Length: 131
Image (cartoon, rainbow, N blue to C red; front, side, top):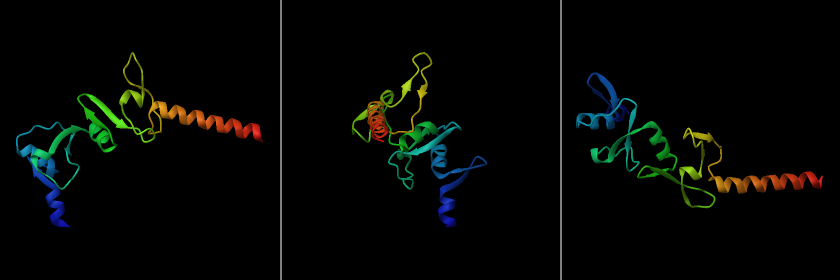
C-alpha cells in the first residue's frame, strides 16, 4: 500500500503533488494551479508524458460525463435517440448573456425531453379523466 501511495504522490519544489502532475512539471510543462492533469486514454496507471494533458476541471468533468470536444464544440450522444448532438441541443442558452438559462435533470436532448414530457402529460390527463 505504501509503495502505491508514494508512486501516486511526489514532492516538487517544496509541494506535494500527484505523480502525473509531477511528471509534466518536471518535463518543463507549465500547469496553472486550477488545472488538473488528464490521462488521455482514461487509464490512470498510464503515466507516459505523451498520455498526459493539463485541462480545466470543467473540461475534465465533461469528458468523464461522456462529452467529446471537436474543435471548440462539445458533443454528446443522447441515450434515447442515440444521435450525437452539440451542447446547444442539450441546453437552452440565453442569447444576450451566452449562459445556460435552463438546467434539466434529464440527460436527454431537448427534442427527446419534450417528447418525454408530452407523453407524461398525456398519461396524467388520461388518468385524471378516467377516475
